[in-house]
Length: 187
Ligand code: S3P
Figure (cartoon, rainbow, N blue to C red):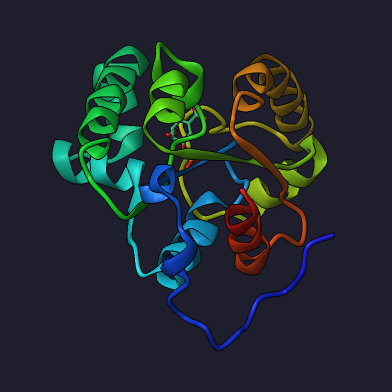
């Protein structure tokens, strides 16, 4: 059972372990990594980094722009470079791109350099959230609702073996920052 911790306690970092100086939130597109990650960072008084935003800032282009001009392979290379750079930082919560853990060595790198949490949602829940999202995502652009559900189901099936390598799994529906801090406190 997940107990609630003191709502008024804004800085929870006193119980944080050594491995928890870097916390990686992983999971499919639309699982809520950015929203949860920024709340968690605030709660721990950590820096918050959204990997996609950092890639965009560094490249001076949007993620869809990188995909269309350079292709996914180049995007994955830049994602890897940014990840290596992030592994030098301390006291940071990182919302990763949905594909990052599933390419090259990125999942092992995250597991070796911090604490990883998989935010797990079902394909129908992801579909609903992605349909409501304003973020442009090249991998799902132009798909109908039915195509989207099939796409999510197939891709999640391929990706879940990577996501399941995370140190922790948190069911994403109704998940809030208190659940995440409790998970970290107990580990
Ligand atoms: C991708 C997920 C996106 C972004 C890119 C590719 C993926 O991030 O990195 O569009 O391969 O699943 P979000 O998970 O933040 O949407």
